Length: 259
Ligand code: GTP
Ligand code: MG
Image (tube, rainbow, N blue to C red):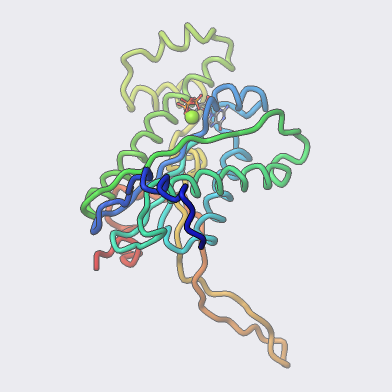
């Protein structure tokens, strides 16, 4: 590359390498999705298509970038995890963050029609993002638990709130009724007033969405006799599972194992 007298401007760039031996979390969040969801008449409190679109973007992200080992999403946010040993873009924070946000946003727009065939995209969806380092896999588990607890609390509240509003209460009245209630009260309210068993609501709403690689058995072809030939292969999958307890992690030890 030619060396011009302008080259010195390079020296102003700062090193933003993330510290080694740290797990990396990239969390992206839809900007003004309160408004965006209203403009596109998303179902309240949960729009299945909108959530599936978010999940599809996250799945595409893991397929595109193998360094992302796990993702967890709820509402308009998604967290992506990179291992402590990852050398993705030399661990440069701005590179990792900017590509995550731009890739996710592009896929969101590209796939919009697939999930909303009868709804025109009225304005550009956009996302903000942040990168946080955590020194231990144990803290990554706590981070994910924090997000899943948040999902549960918000979803339970929003489910009650919108049931009350849809039954004729004003938003103010619904808010007043729910003030000071604990989880048990909300479950009671749903059951007594609306005959809804909270635990029977779709797992995607209650648990959020996990995206990760798993071994799956697939039929690859059939032999001459018409018998299926099955192979095990690794695939990016989506699940709506509990990630607070130990079961998921002991069944998928390779996701958060430390080298
Ligand atoms: P900023 O992130 O600060 O820009 O604000 P925001 O408006 O995006 O709010 P925030 O990220 O705190 O919360 C996400 C918001 O998106 C929710 O409060 C809802 O208004 C909306 N939203 C997300 N998912 C759904 C959905 O499935 N259905 C509906 N109706 N709204 C949703
Ligand atoms: Mg948001």
